[in-house]
Amino acid sequence: MPRMRNLHPAPSSDPETLSVRRSELTCPGHSPAMMAKAAASEADEVILDLEDACAPNQKEAARGAVITALGTLDFGKKIKAFRPNGLDSPHFHRDLIDVVEGAGDRLDVIVLPKIRAAEEVRFVDRLLTQVERAKGWPVGRIRIEVLIESARGLLAAAEIASASPRMASLIFGIADFAGDIGARDFSGDSSVRFHHAKAQILIAARAAGIDAIDHVTVQYKDDAQCRRDAEGALAMGYDGKWAIHPAQVRIINQVFTPSAEQVTHAHAVVEAYERATSAGRGAIGLGDEMVDAASLRVERRILALAERAKVAVAPEPKPI
Image 1 (cartoon, rainbow, N blue to C red):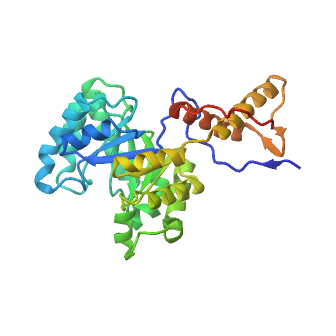
Image 2 (spheres, one colour):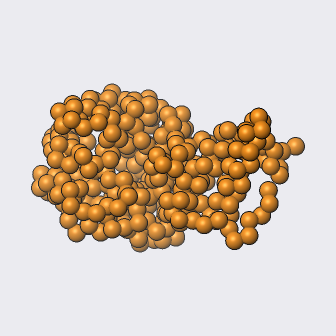
């Protein structure tokens, strides 16, 4: 009997609209040199950081530097994001208003740290809507990604994930989360030590139809650890991973990019299914697999990822 594929559906399967987030590279918003390096990197998304990466006496000047970077740097096809300080900080309001008013037409995403409840996301949504309307921009174009970094945030992850149509992803902020729950060590295999948290974030994201992004590997010079973390996240079902150094991006992209064999298989599945539906059939058997509309979304996402990463089909495709 053919086995049914058990793969989660992606938030979007259209190659024209899919936002690929294999790697999200964060860099200090006060450093023009580091922001330029990030813009030139191979990351899928660049996050200009006004929060943890900036000392208190740098934060005000960093806002202007981020606005300048968004307006002058060539990011190519990368997703352009910035992270303001937390909503409870004295810096948040000016972070959001200044940067969005100054560069919102060139900004794709706001990454919100330390979110604990869905109402906090809705509050930011309303602020963004007010700025967009005042500027005459399309309402809702600027998306929101949320860092889950506390026990309260984790318990509310499902509500947070669906709090706004702007929501694009949940991100596991392991360092702050570890501190919040009293964990003494967050190195090593996070898929074991923090499996519950990672699973909850993944499930919440999937239920809301948005991406799930894994935590950063703080040992930024340890390529092997970065690869192990990325492979563990991929095995769980995560869409991508945070990076704090451009050298990590190459490893992360390699792990989250489909192989030539997977791309060949995806092409064959999509073509076979389209032939079947044209003939009036739904689910079809291919080899030892049962393919239906749900698995088709997965294969189309593989093709979209492959197109972004310029992955060719295998030289000698095997029949399925």
